[in-house]
Image (cartoon, rainbow, N blue to C red; front, side, top):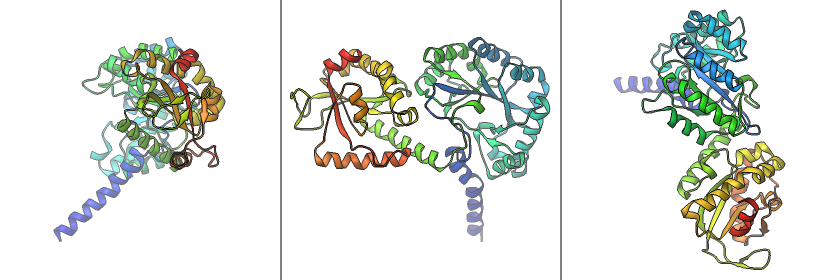
Length: 401
């Protein structure tokens, strides 16, 4: 009997917490999480406020930079400081619901977890006089009751794609700024805090972070204005799964984003040239095993940007970053060739690369992987077969150095 009861309890917990954790909290199914990667815009979001000791400095920095953000506010704090909510709205920011009580959903009663989104939404609407569209539960944590509460409140759950970790005890403005600079991609939803423990980092961090965004051609917009920021479904979950697979592949292969930034179109690694019997366009043989720099395409950005914009970005900016790496990093000092094995060879041809057909066995292997990627990103399954695209070091630097 005791064993059966234990199994029943574990099964109930798996259904109540485990399933929402995997599908919603981790998978973000049904939540707004990120936008498309075609525009250099992000949605800065701030949780836990408003707080008169810290929120005004956040608003000042956003106003100075001419950028907009979304504030997920605690209903009691909003009622206590309506002047700050009024300022948020008057300066063009979006105000949404965070919680009535800032408590992790897993340690709440089911009825408490279900009622909190409803109470939070009603409380925030009372202060703003506007309909709340989104709810972000404390810590982004979900149970079945949380989902029911959002449904009763008539709001969509909102998550994030980049966590600043400003709340972590070891974080500093410098470490968070560096972290966000490396992880930044178009369409990102970034979570920071304008109140609570995270505010000690975010307040001094924000002016420099906004300056970084401007220097890289980004702007922050409201979550409801972020291009393509809709509810995440199975296609998005499938795409994120392949992004995770790419990350494992990169880790095993020593591959990293050029310039250390996730918004570069290319991931690079030093490798021995893998093929035999290959020649350059002028007939010069390329010896197998020669030190070379291999680059891989950043597929999500390429897909969302489209071919023409990707070529422009590669020519104007991203290949120049690769060239700087080639010239400055010691591990690339002996590299003789720059190459890619991919199905985007027509685009690389426009960028000056010589394209060559691959040996049949390599072509079949890469074709299978290209088909997997096309399935993941919804591309044309009849796209061109992979080819080798190659330039000498000297020619690559002449063009992009």
